[in-house]
Length: 335
Image 1 (cartoon, helix red, strand yellow):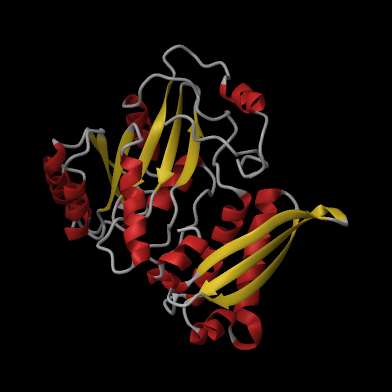
Image 2 (cartoon, one colour):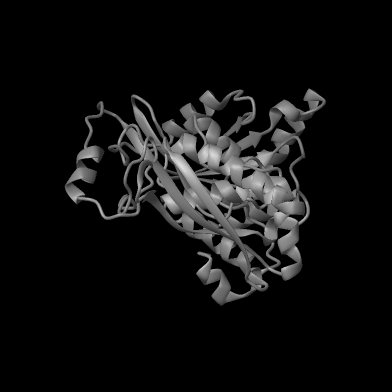
């Protein structure tokens, strides 16, 4: 469980290199002195789609490590984010929303979520109390029936709860969801959007972690490879641009992130945007190429901030026919 650091390097505060590293250098970063009683562990963020898992991860870590859009099902990978305090290190895994699958991609994402449960110290069950505790939450609770890992319930989006008198009834419903696995170890209401009560959540999570050393060097906040990070940022901007037209049909791969051979201050990123049908290409590109240009410009601007370097981002739109249902296509796209 604690050996998942191979192949990671550092760019700024990100673990984003894919080249091999000297193991001694990695271990030197992990063996930082910590106080007696220091706690550490892996915490999986689980919940139905659109409960605010990625927003909560970004809020807790204090910087953006996971893309966020209003579209349910945006998260497709288990993204790690790291919070280091004086007395603890919390390593969060942001997982895709668990839901009844309609495609092979959805089934594989559900399998990914379940696979994380066995290798973590805590499960953080995130619900949207503003929308109300519903069948999707109950479905996930039943899925956790055989899990022995402690489960902390998070009642998210309390800032959107109206009227406020709904809080206690919703918390009572949430408490009942814990019956399949013996009850929640704690229930914490928060607002990932505003930050309300998030500090309290961190305290609760820390109290349930085992004592142990740091798993990551103190300044590191994520371990996404450069190519995955660039692909995710571009996909976020494309989803925002496409809105409701085809967000789930878009996949992004990055062939290369490399220094420009002629300019030391420039990174070159070659990205491919995959859609399922030829008719979807004009939707992504937009009239006169304006929509794709706007999304790529927004992605490039954000990547320049993350990498601390000028970025040249090239994009190509290709058809991967019905890729969400094709096992070979899914494999090529990293799913």
